[in-house]
Length: 179
Image (cartoon, rainbow, N blue to C red):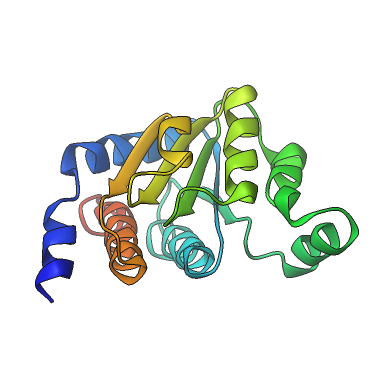
């Protein structure tokens, strides 16, 4: 319990504030937001997209254009089966992403090849890239333009902290902005 508390206390709130500003700007400019990850991070991506589509957008004049690239199981399995699992996210970005869009990559290890390929592509076309990484950030941390790193060795605590960060962002828009 103390270790989880320490991981949560170590979250860089200034960087969370910068991420919130990026979300505000993406919404104001009508930019698309893409969220991705594997395993527990995929579940977090889906959860976060739902919070932003419904909780932070429903009934409001200004809405988020956000989708979790983890949610198209037929697309993911088609690419994984027919080509390679490493491209399941980058190929979706090639269809949908444009310069100025926001790509949020979640990876506890920071070393998932499919996540790295997506962020490399997003950077190459001029997207803003936000990482939620763990441990030492892996290769993802320095690759993203903004890295919210949970420097914790335990994957469960990394995932808990990532969910807390995602809730900080989504609930900022749900709780502090007027209807």
